[in-house]
Length: 549
Image (tube, helix red, strand yellow):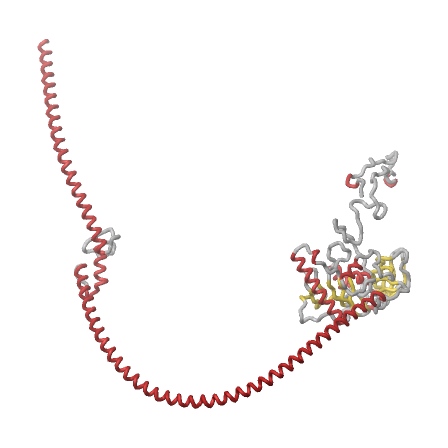
């Protein structure tokens, strides 16, 4: 048993020793092979570096060669059989075929270039020979041309001398004629100078005479206008006649009947002013002469609302509501004086209407019937057109002067080809001519300036044709116009009526006192049996109507 164990230990020792020996041998062998491998690796690394350096050198040489050849941007060198321009060799082959052509094409780039060089040398030699020959021909041509020019010049000199002789003869003849003409011109200039001096003297005398005549005519016109206005202001002459008279009056119903009707071509809505029987002339102008001048229009338009100054013969106004018979019509009373009421045989008159014929007018200026700041031009057109009247010339609020071919539908801007104001027009009615200082904007100032300019021209046209001028206030009074409504515009000072803010007082212009209710309710509302006594209110009104003016 002990010997067996000893044997096993020996075997294990032997095995261990053998393993150690084998491991040592293997380690030695591996160490030796690693040294060899490292040596070989160093050698191969050196060789690879040299190869890489040599390759880089070859690559640089190839790139330099491509640059010299002319294809530095072509990446591939290519093969000798390439024909595409995607490679350097293919491009070179294509250049040889294209540039060399069938005549100079060779197997290589260098041979092709040498052939081309030889061709260039030959062409240069031929060019030198041709140049020498050309110079020789030029010398010969110049000699021949010189001889020909000398022959031609000799002939021209002969002809020139003959022509100069003829020219000298003609110049001498012409100078003689010119001297004669100059003498005649001097004589005629003297005569012309005398005529011009005489003409200037006559013109100066005529201009002085015309100036003196124009000045005298102007003075006479001014005197005539002054005297005419003075006569009109004093006498207020009228050439109009009453259109009819009042037949009957019903003051309870506010109706009157006049002696005009169907046979007189009377239409409804025609308005008449009513004159006293002992009138001093219908259609008379107001106290200022009806020249249409602005200062006179302002005086008349600033008059009292009931009756304008100077219209003391006008008792009121009426409007036709119904045409009853051949010479009978019904009209309603628009306005009358309670102290001088309308009565039978009072006379009626309107410039808008005449039996059997329409009246025509011209208007210039702003049309504002009640001075409320709003234009009444549309109402004016309706009033005139409604009874058959018409406007021919009119200056609108925007400053345009229009000419009506068919009132009020058809019109156009006035031109020089249109007829001016003439005797077919009954009146030139002048509204308010605005002042430039009143304009609120540059555009409105332009409109005002145009209205003022048209006003001057139309007044001059009316004076030349003896058409009567009348301001808008006179015109409205003659036609019996009564304002249909009154619009209160806060802040508007220039108006013919006065309206205080809030409720009105018991008297015109009076102060508004305490507005507290008495507390009593009308007996009309106390008839219910359930009400034991008359209701009493709180006696308070809204604060909006408190004491104040």
